[in-house]
Every structure is written in structure tokens, then in C-alpha cells.
Length: 49
Image 1 (cartoon, helix red, strand yellow):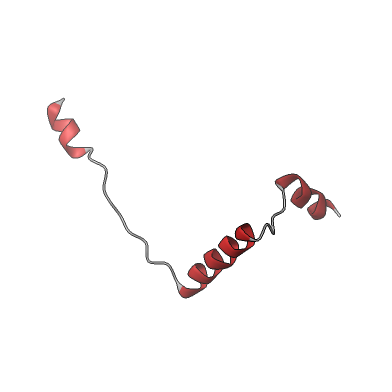
Image 2: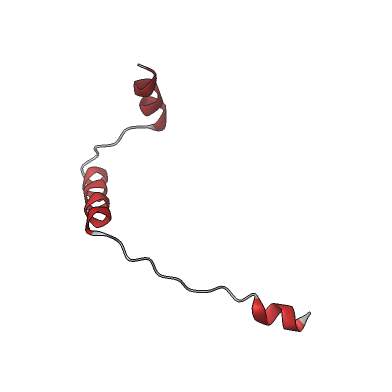
């Protein structure tokens, strides 16, 4: 059992964001900052229209 625990340690992995992903995140943060939000319910209504 102790041997099993030694092999199940979580691994730390990194992901390199692309410029497009970084830009998208920055725009989203700006939208949140300035209150430009839409609820999931409103988004679903728009999709139905």
C-alpha cells in the first residue's frame, strides 16, 4: 500500500497561453470590471431567438 501512495503524487503541469488566449482573457477581465455581463439565462434566451 505504501508503494502505491508513492506513485500517485500529483504532477505539476504548465500550459503556455497563446497571444490570442491572453487577449481574450484580458478582454473578459475588462468586461467584468466595467459590468458588461450577461447571465446564462439571458444568453440562453438569445440563442433561442
